[in-house]
Length: 590
Image (cartoon, rainbow, N blue to C red; front, side, top):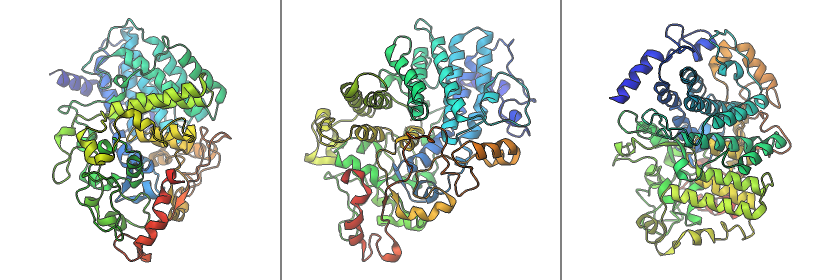
């Protein structure tokens, strides 16, 4: 009943039209429906749920694009975005439009909160606004910001794009002030409308500062002094600036499975068939005897028996795991038939999506969350900051944060070692007894001689499967671990980034058509090179990346098999290709 009441209020008071002609009408106001004014007495709780749900479409891009470009999944169809780095358009309209539209709900929540002088809800509005604008800005570069977030109802026919170097500090300051609005003595907010923290207002305060730390780390190469000041401020005063302290604080959009259905259940069959786990992820997990293999992936349905003609699973247990080849560029048909097709490769694991015998999503996953930030991620960020000397503590503190990150990830996914049924079925008698044994392995142990920043990045990558947009943002920032591209990706440089990791996505076509002057100016002046078309829109480096501290986006390459050379599974030259090139796909074999 309460959910029905909330939805009724939303229908009456929220803006939902996308048909207006002006930029501000489209995203911020609708003159045909009432806006919340400063004199309104509507309780702010009615706007929290719709504000959060407005970003629900992010999930499709997180699963369908971010999973592929971060090499968690291997594409069996629609190869361009993930495998070829080719068609990084506006991500099917799932980010820009929904995010800007949600700003209308942010404004309504903020106004309702201010009318009642309720700083708790005002803080929640500001934090969500910051997350939305951070996401668009970090994906695209310069975006409309200051004219969008102000509290004016002025209708604008054109709206300018603001520089990323001005947006990032502004968001960071707003996050700081939003966190300070929330006091440790504050009562919780309405639990039914808060789909993130079920009303726990202190977790919102932690989120504000955890996002601040993430953003400051992302900004470090571009503005080291400001970024370091922010990170040091947070770690030096945990009472004023608390951050996540356990997995209970994780940032996620939650669903009840009844009135609010998770995208993991709503995902289309075509996406299930398109996205299978990649050989990169599966082989790295198996090489570390990592229990997350049974969390992230399902066992294969069928197994080949001849290593001379096909790729065989490399784990020793009775449940076999093998990933789809990441990096096929030749065609959808080649990809879908690789190594015998879908039955011979592992699909997305039950922690995310449960399926029936025909591989269709079941209602068991209707309440599975879309996770956007974790305690594990925070610890890896802290480890990197300590290792680089951004915060105090040096190597020993970095090690402690690094190991906390591993522990937090294993705990989040309820991982077990020897004696746990799924683990034993994956590794048989070759498994590890406990987490300590896992951390003592030469490729995990902090003191075993591997590069510390690589260790942090690798474990962060392993912990961040389908973690919002962060695996993409983070790899673009560090280029660690060294994910490979197919050498044939170079063929797509004329319409994408080729063998370079994509630097950004494209602005929506609607901006080019309706906000032309600002759109063209942003493309001409907002990056290290003018964006002139499809050939360089994914190579242009935004402010975050256009500096001496940022790495090259050029990726190491491996030799992709070709059907025409009879190098695919089942063909005459497969074994030769496999022996020469399979292990070259994996950075840990260098």
